[in-house]
Image (cartoon, rainbow, N blue to C red; front, top):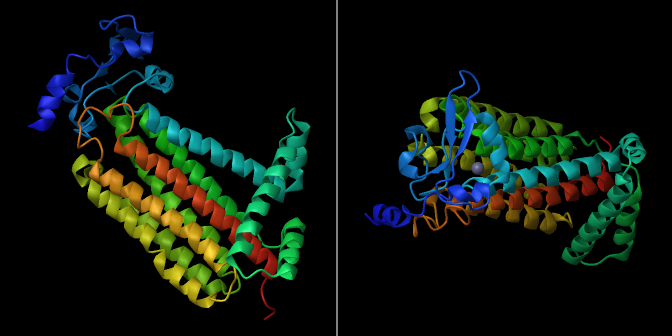
Length: 368
Ligand SMILES: [Zn+2]
């Protein structure tokens, strides 16, 4: 088989063992005492065929696996090259970006936090001010491009951007917190699941939980702000997606569903959850048809949906590594592309959330 022969071709090039130690020869191996009984564990990168069954996930990635490494070595492998390095760093950096955005917005919406940050050595609050005003500029620029330009409305928008927040912020922070949880649990899963079967199972479940949480919390800003004046729809949609999330996590707790052969089933569960957002989206567009920011938010949410769906397609098809097994082990394989698209989708959704908040701050709710 093509894959077999590709593997044999690569086999003599022994798993980049030397990459960790600065290239001092292929026989270099790191030894580390195991945690408990003083038993020595070997830390070298191995090929797919040397992996225990539970780690055999992608037969098109042939080399550079860490297998059953002690936890400390697994942690330190954050700073070395193996086939999970980019998977870890993409979501770790994504986490840092969302953490930064959370701090910026906490400073923006809650002056006490800005003051607290201001007392720290670095004036983050100033940066928060600049960045948020930049975001404001970009968004109001985009909004005015999409609508027929009305200078009075533009001035009103600028005014409200400067004014104090009028609608509640917790749904927005729920989204930011959920995104951080998802990205951090994913990074932890990619970093540490090479340690043992038990930890692998736990971290994979944590990773699935993180994805379900990300999908559920993504519903919060749009549903909350769009239907703020019709709370029954908030309750209907937010309870429905939360129930779907809990059900999905419950189903994925079964070790059977964590098996590699159920990859498509798992992906379909998540895609189904995400696509259920079409129902409130159609509802929202119908009731806000004349809202000038409709097109901006649709563009952001369209970009989010496209990123997630294309990412899932990479995840499922395992392109490009299936075409050239072994050639994308370290860089360029499908899971890395999937991760990058998840970040892009989450950032697009963040952009939409900012527009929803601005719109709601501006419009409020008509008196009942
Ligand atoms: Zn991943």
